Image (cartoon, rainbow, N blue to C red; front, side, top):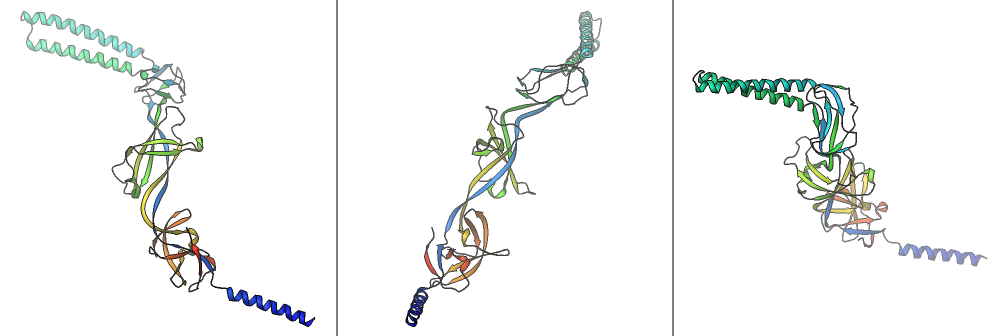
Length: 338
């Protein structure tokens, strides 16, 4: 029985020695720091605007006698939208027309008298001026009458209205809005660092929650000539063909931009250690010894993080296994991460 116990003890000692003999430093994976082309990804948000949008409102106050559209109706340019009480305007036109006819009749008489030298040149010119003034008053009366017939300034879709025949409107009181949504505009604020990379004519993709993953192509129509000194952003404008009517003014649109941000150093996110606001990596020297290095990081690129200071191209950093390391430890490098 004792021999059996001794044999087990000896076997355990041999196994322990074998494990101890094969035990080296922590096994890690490394990566060589190199410069990489790092894309800048920006998500910009804006609200769609109609290509043209105007308030339909009378220039003079009057009572409504006719509403010739319904909300949501598509109207053509020049279509009569609203009629206002024009009885007084018609009376003014009749009065001005009669005054003009009278002035012209008198002018004809003056011209005949002038030939017989019965009136002076000054009197003739005075009557000619009276005719011109009467013509101007008639034209003004017609303009006032036109103010009482509101027409569509362009083709589009009418918005909501609460106006009905009999409503009394004041001057410049809005009746409804007219939208030209055949094309839509989207204004975006682009950071100063990136806006010069955008060119008029570029095509950008936009999405909206109303259409899920469907992408809409917008053409870059305008790039602002200056940067806002307060926000350090520049305004750009996209235009969308909306002939199918899928988009509506007021929708929130998101534009994902991927721009070349030049070459920069980057390390895997798995290589980072955190201590408060500090970021660290373990650098491996030629002898396999690791040293903890403080670095300054830039943008987060998903599985990678931009390094703006603290590392040089060609250095090796631990990419996997950092949690089991401490400064000055010898490590076994299992391989170079890809």
